[in-house]
Image (cartoon, rainbow, N blue to C red):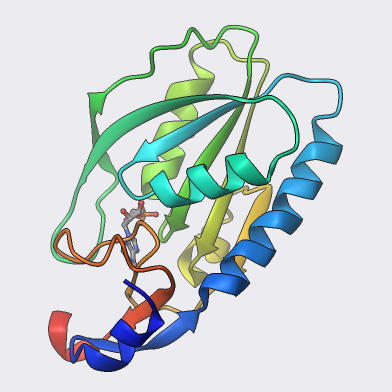
Length: 185
Ligand code: IMP
C-alpha cells in the first residue's frame, strides 16, 4: 500500500515519513554502521514482526557482508502501550559468544521491551551489543535508553506502516502514517 492509502483511510490521520525519506535515512545509517564496524563482523538481530521491513532495507543498504537472525518476543500490554513483561516466542539460531550484535528495531517507545532484550542478549557473552532503530518516541529519550543509531525522533503519536501494525493491519504500508486518535482513544 502506498501513501495514497493514508489519504483515503479514515482510520489514518496523516503521513509522517514518506517512503523516500525512510530510504534516504536508512542509507545514511548504513554508511555510519559501515564506518563503525570496519574491521568487525556484524550479526543483525531483527525482532519480529515489526522490524522485517527495516531489516530488509537496512541490510541491503549495507555494502558489506552481514549475518541476520531473528527473534520473536511478545510484550504484554494493554491497547497501545507495552508493559516490559516479555516472553520469547522464537529464539535466535545463532550462538552469540564473541559476536558483534546489532539489534535492528522498528520503534522504541518506552524502551521497556528493548531494555529486556539487551539484558537477555548481553547474558549470552557477545563481544558487543548495539541498537539501530528506525523510529524513537520521546519516552525512550526521557528513559535514557542508549541507542547508537536512530532514524527519526518522532512525536508521541501511534504510528503504523513499514512493518508497524495496529491490530495486525498496515504493516505493508510503504510510508509511516499516524493513526487517527479516535481509533484508539
Ligand atoms: P516499548 O517497550 O514501549 O519501547 O514498545 C516497543 C514495542 O511496542 C514496539 O516494538 C512496537 O511493537 C510497539 N509500539 C510502540 N509504539 C508503537 C507505535 O506507535 N506503533 C506501532 N507499534 C508500536
